[in-house]
Image (tube, rainbow, N blue to C red):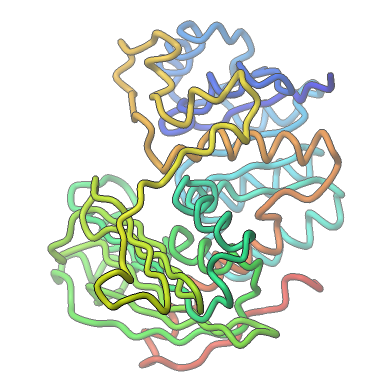
Length: 373
């Protein structure tokens, strides 16, 4: 059975993935990389990983590494992805792909030049809610899809480093990904409006004044458009990543409050019978038996390393093992992962251009053609 030698870069959120790779039958969790040597060694010791790097450039010189999974801060994503591709490594990278449209295009072109695979690890398109809606769609239960909507709202006060004052749409893939990903649509152009204002000390950091940014996305060669909105500061809202789909036969709506059940609306019933609450099933059965536990349990509980205090439970809709499995299988089967480089660039650039649109009063902005770059 073919095994891929994996190196994980960045061990905050990134450490969540270590036990998943360790258990996956097609992976060898080979190396870890972290600038903080004390943290590097603590995690290496806890998970029994001998190959450790505090210098990313040194890691890339290691001929044993087949692929890197990048979990570094957002400003480093593009540079580290490009370096890895040019060093002959496949790349999985946490969201977003990059911070500029130009960087997105450079990664797409470098993937083509090197022949290596790139996958943006967008959690929502592997969350159980998305997989449930995808199943309904593929079975024909939704009928003709007529409209898609998504949101991502959170309160980021107190977050460190580059987060304060971040333009809302600069971190938009969690809501752009599902509306584009369900039908594998390509965003063609976008228009976005800003609404409200955040505190002056936050607004001046990125010259981004808006409390909320809401965008309409038009899809290429499709009669569909989608609506997405984001907020990060000075908006009262429980954390919510929502995804909603309206079809001719059935529609799916995300619950308003965390912990409640989603709603399915079915056409042509008595009015009071149209909506019904549904429990979203888990999709662990799509995974190898060795990693099925990771859709519902925190990885540190399973690995008996709770003393590291990194337990994040089954966050992100149980998506982490699905992401790992998709990336590894794309490498083993020598096929494109989902999302691939062009799709990742398209989704990321929607957010970047949406913010530019909002700063220009809602101007329509065209997406580059990443698919024929």
